[in-house]
Image 1 (cartoon, helix red, strand yellow):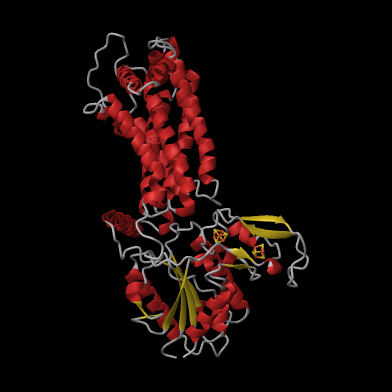
Image 2 (image 1 turned 180 degrees about the vertical axis):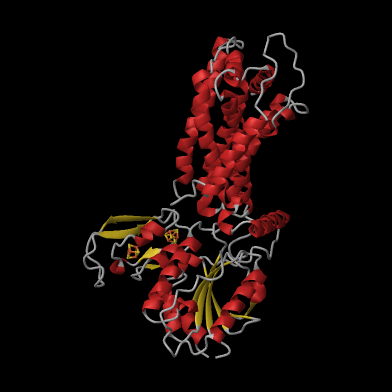
Length: 395
Length: 146
Ligand code: SF4
Ligand code: SF4
């Protein structure tokens, strides 16, 4: 309950401050929207929506794109200027990508600040870090595909970063370019590195959702309409543009950088390529470690009692599957019943509920679901609740 | 009945109770006894009816704001179960308005207290509603929450 008391460490106080800010923000948003429509509750669904828009518009662009040094820039121009609605679709792809990054970052920070990455929720967090990594890679290769001046500079910077990795660096750069220098094979590889990781995102999403029953995959309908409308509006009003075509002799002039994808390259202004690589690796590894080291307090300090993993009372379970449908973490499986139960209702059962202890978060939702008194949380026994009720109504 | 006996099941993760409690009762509304539960979805609807049958004038469950349940689903499931239980109560000629579902976040102390107070006042106004079986009225909305 009281996540706001008894913080010992400075880090804990800092994280508690962030939690407060997050919740205050929610309270403010709730003055504008009903709670069911708070967009911050649907950051995951919004990311998924953006990803879906990206896939659809990406398929369209793929039909026209040519992955060769000579034709890439021209094919992008052709899409923008000559294909009917091509410019719009390109803009949609561009702005949906920005929206995607904003949404996944919001998703990450919100779930971090509200402690929704701890304990048995480390699975979505870890898969989320990989989704983020791949998302960044896809965004980066997307910029390169246009093969304008900016793309060329980015590629050069990226190669410098690759080469700075000890031992493997030169080899990696060679693999990336498909030869000793940027050549005809390079853009094919970049296209591959754009599309295949994007497909992999869906595999990772399966991992991301693995332990969740009824994940909120889509935001509410009005938000879907608003987002789709907004992306199309932006694409129409501010079309996505290319810079100058890339020529081997081109000297990098100034061009707009996209903050979300380009932070590492922007850092190159101050740091050596090797330092940026080290920083990136540290961030990623640190990110993976967050669920295990960023606990602001222990459960007792938070005033939360340890409830114990839910237990099925074999004799009472009728195999009605209600708990199986309601457990939000897919922690209950139904197995063929090895024998009849003891109670009258359970005498003819064909199924038996079994708790997968490693997935159970001790929330007790299954207790409320079971109409046959066949589930208990060890530290919150039904008997104790009944005693409390009796206390409450007497006197 | 001026001080209706009320039992409240309050989720550990929803409204912060420490500053509001005096023992197991709300300091400002001592007629309200609070039972803390690990998630609003933990509450078995049968317990709510038992509490009513054992002499409580009203029962409520408090979870986090809808959409923000720590366990993602608990408060939605509980809202459905409370609705269902209200229909069941009505069939048994118990006024369904004696059962309510609230949703408040960690810092929504004032809103929580205000809603409990309204609930308590309404029960006080219905005093005697227990003795005379309630006519089959429309089921009351599940708490004032959106
Ligand atoms: S307590 Fe029950 S509902 Fe909650 S995670 Fe464990 S098995 Fe699932
Ligand atoms: S809800 Fe209860 S009776 Fe039904 S399957 Fe689950 S444990 Fe068994």
